[in-house]
Image 1 (cartoon, rainbow, N blue to C red):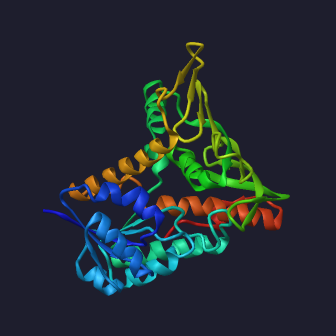
Image 2: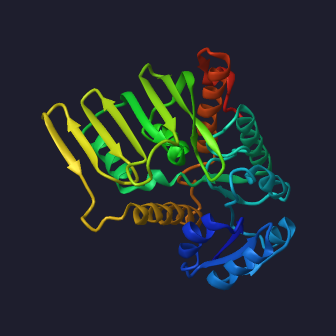
Length: 333
């Protein structure tokens, strides 16, 4: 049987990162809902499918999943009416909610994200997130190396991250098995451009994980897009892994063999092609989970975990004190 996929939000994210792949799946039928009907019509003309005008019309088709691909500022408002109609599955772009933009996540965004997941649980709607950085070749290769060489759990993590990659890199900590428990954060005093008219200040946070490990992360928009947009170091008892940017060079240091290995892409490597390929892998894995009636590869709770970290960080900045994530921002729905 074929899959019916509803698309909510037909801007650049949908047309560049999702629809080229979805439209090539022989068993997928698409329908579109957008605030701007002309955009939805343009997608239908280019990628096939039908256009609807209301959430009711979209859900009347009984889609197997609805992809909520609006901008992060609009995702909460776009999702509420969908949940009233009890869809089978919702698949979210990242971050789950960011009413003031991804560089300005607030405590209220966490509460709104929690509200969405709670309503989804009440209606029996399965939720999923994209978090396509988990599907980079380097991310998956690193996980395999950690498992094969029995590196264990990270004992320190440190990261320098552009805000364009911010929520993804926070998620990568969870992907590698580290759950932050307490955080103490500070905000810089310099405004850096973060968009055509927006600015954002640097943030720096120190944190402790629930099993005792520690780490630091610095977020900024003051990094050139021509160079790696993040560096992340995962230090283990028996090894160390260094990531550089969007599926860029990765170093693995094995303490037991006293060796350093470098994993690089071929000379014709294009990081943006790798970036687009990660969406293909993420969406393909999600579609296969539906076809096989299995749990989503990245469940919706991952989006709330990421917002929990950011909300705790913002509270720590505003109150100038450490914040316990589990106590002050519980995930229980």
